[in-house]
Image 1 (spheres, helix red, strand yellow):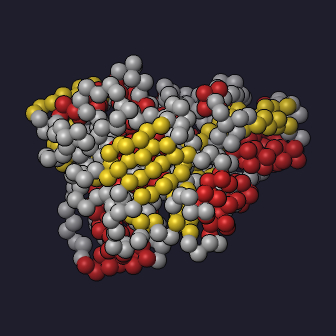
Image 2 (cartoon, one colour):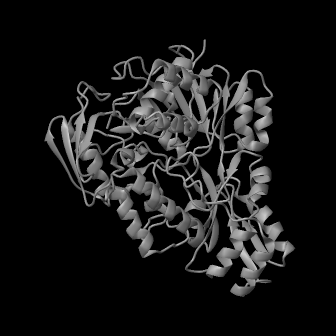
Length: 533
């Protein structure tokens, strides 16, 4: 998966480093590299090298205390069942994946030394040698086969069972080689294997409370719904990592309390700072915000099986996207165009424009649907970030044209089980995924497990399979551009904005970089950041 760089010079390195110092985005740098003839996979290495060149020298030692936004008694150390950011952060500290997504959005090798294919259907994984688990056992192909096959067992309850189902054969060729055969060709397998759920666990593991993996940290304490503490793995296979001696992670659900804990010095990292509290952090000399727009979004889901298409179209014209970014997100976001592939993704369709705010058009479609004047329930909750503020803005716009939206605010506890995917009109909250195929497979194909608006399109399903199996990147761009347009026009998921994630950090925290898999460096920050003495 690694391409040689044939026409890249030290001057080009300097140009990239300068761009980084000037605040260039990942997309800006990718364009720069592609213009110079650097392949995406090689571009990741260039970007990583440049980042290291401008970064401060890492310091070893220290105990980092970090607070996330949510936890529960269902917290888990089983990667297959992970569902919250707190789960991801813990699992990233204890385990490794075969591949990982770097800061440019390109898959790089981790436990896999090589990942090769000729047809995008049969893949050969060559494992790194000399990698050991926390208990001293050497990593072998048997561990990889076991870890991947778990997702195919319904009894496990894997969160990525639908994605893993395409792996029809997973077998060990020898102690360091695994062959994966897919149901159909999928050029995105290196991206898929980098998802948090595909962490490699030890062969035969049934008790995950000990968190035995090959990762940068060893588990010391795990109290579901309370906290976890991990200590440095002194036998870690990556030279020089991690920098921290230990990492403590817990959740403070209340946004204000979370920021106050940071400013009081009780924690050094505060996940997901509410835009309303951003000035409190920015105004302190010993603290700062780490911002990244990598594809998170809160969306309004209108189920197509219980609502008329004209009503959905009317709602899309009723959304004042600029006002939502300015008022609900306090400027922490980019205007969205009702499909999930943001500007941070190399497959984003730049020609697809968002629907303009047009109350008269909205009223026209509401009249066609026969719903103008009716009271329409809309479910919102603090569980879906910014959804309550968004709902209030949309409700006010609706009232101006005689449309009654009954915004029902429900508790966070149980929201995802009781309302998400179930209520006729409700809000969702989606974390970034690295490829269009993963977004579309999870959220928009006819059999998608999280089909939020019950969107069904045989044409869309067919295009999904075509793009998935193609190794022609230009062709995939073309197909994905059309699919984004289809979602924007036809689905019942309204995505008014892509959220800018802001984490609050102590000025002593160094080395934190954005990552396409989400905040906290794709939830893997503990392995890479350090505390300045």
